[in-house]
Length: 150
Image (cartoon, rainbow, N blue to C red; front, side, top):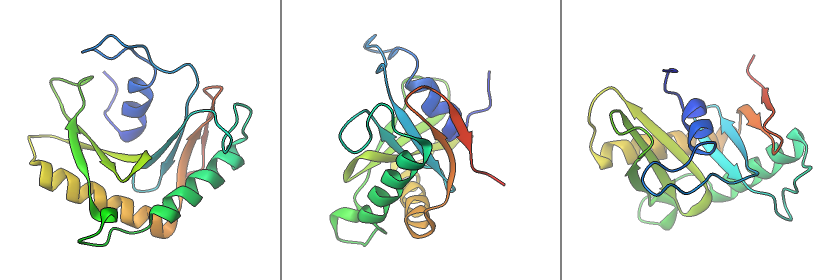
């Protein structure tokens, strides 16, 4: 089995059927992976058409993450939800979602962790990514992956 990373998890989830419901993955999707593993997920739309370039996808992802901004305690920007990822029933893989339909993180742990711990760690990573806006990798709608790592 591949090493579990945010990249391998997002790619697996969006290219294989849901193990609980059997629902099929979307035909076209793109993801942008930021330096601290925040992910922006996109489907073809007005902002990101099917033929969107890597640069266009990166610009939209940066803009959306910047708009969401850092987490401020006591505001919706600090809210998060944590769910165990059903594709990995024997591993400690969690999805952390926020007040934005396309931005999330994965928490990947060696042992069980509380939802609060997972959520706070993911939120902190998202906050760092909202400040730096540094992208590691981009997957376009054609399934091509471009690495921006040095």
